[in-house]
Amino acid sequence: MLLSEIDIARRLVDPDEKKRLIITPIVDARHQFGPSSFDVHLSTDFHQLENLNRSSIRLDEERSAELQAKYTKKVVLSADRDKEGLYLHPGEFVLGSTLEYFRFPDNLAGRIEGRSSWGRLGLLVHATAGFVDPGYAGALTLELSNVGRLPIELKPGLRLAQVCFFEMSTPSLIPYDKKHGAKYFGSPGVRGSRAHADPEMRKILNPERKPR
Image (cartoon, rainbow, N blue to C red; front, side):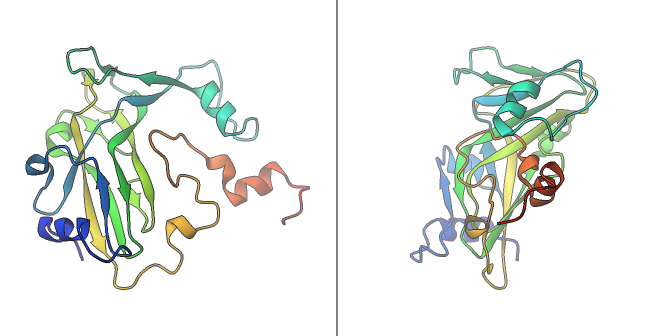
């Protein structure tokens, strides 16, 4: 069941902690609540993919910190709206995150989508990873790309995306916070790919290693 704005508001103050949805900060409820979604703001931190003289991304060469250092550049913008933003050029891709921190209860899932005002300018807010598992906690990562013809200036505080919430018929048996190897749980901001930590990748990268 897709939650209405009334249902979302009720979840924020639910007396049962197991059912309560946490969103913080709520900057301007009047403009953030939609009929069936909640608008989110762009934060200050970005991971910008570098144009490197490499034929491919090799997950078998680096671990997470090394991978991010070699393939991405961290950019931190000022929260001052008068300062210059980050220009996302046509065809470019950058990771950002929501200003808001979320904690989903075990029986609530979410999906993040772009707002139509920005989509009509050619801005996409996720590549494929728009789904949020029950039990997830942290900021939501934005996979920002420009499919338009002109650069788009990104500034912290812009309402670029919206989150909708789905009540599950039963609570998840193993929500994200209890899942073994939950790679992105508790992320306070942008977190790059941890594809190398997938179990099938570990088998490929360490074929001689016996499972524990």
